[in-house]
Length: 335
Figure 1 (spheres, rainbow, N blue to C red):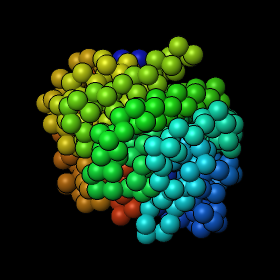
Figure 2: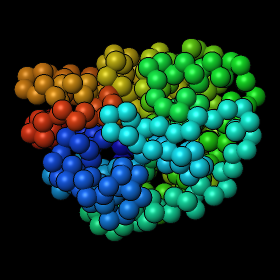
Figure 3: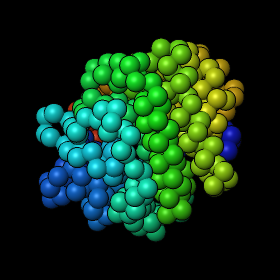
């Protein structure tokens, strides 16, 4: 939280995207007990447990709520399901379906998630930041249009060109609903929140402005108008040079950086405020010297400014838990 307010700390605080996940044997055990993935997300006993597992193991400086970005379309009755080997699927939406969407009951539907946040804040040590999160409107919309993930989100891009008014309506509805959901997480005990735009990198310049910046700016303005103390991290994966003005245009307190962002460019971005990232998750899989060199490069370039150490995207299931421990010890041992 001090770094989110602009302070530079050495060593920097750290947490990892997807730190509660399939690389941990204790997560796999809990996941098997829960049944479906959505049951895991919506059952506070299980969601609290898997959120706390990496905190117990590694003592990260932040815990991130265990949930999923697609609980929003699930709450909008889009029949979201997670199939082993296929990833998330839902009923694809068309122009008429967008017109029928209603976001009024979303926050009420997600009460079990908010109960998880409340219980986490009670159980976590006071010094451990609790992060809430949601998906950015563009990324959530890509799944709603296609009904599943695609390599370059061509279905959503095509839909946006063919039906611009309907697509804008979808993005703005998602922005408003998601902002209220994040405010509810803050009220339940989240210290800060992160907005994940995992598919921002497939957008051209004009589309990035319309689909990635404008809806997220609307969200952050709404959150801060309702809760002025709120701190928001925005992560636009693959945004590249468009990150130059992303913080200013969205109003984010910190920006997350994926592993493709050059460290010299990241240092320029850091002059405007806190950055988060940006170790390649494959270095955690490799371990050893590859992991240490990646950590040291980030600390050398960004460690003297406001930095939250993290990965450039989520940790992968192949990661060795011992390599994660190596990462924590290397970052914490930095002078």
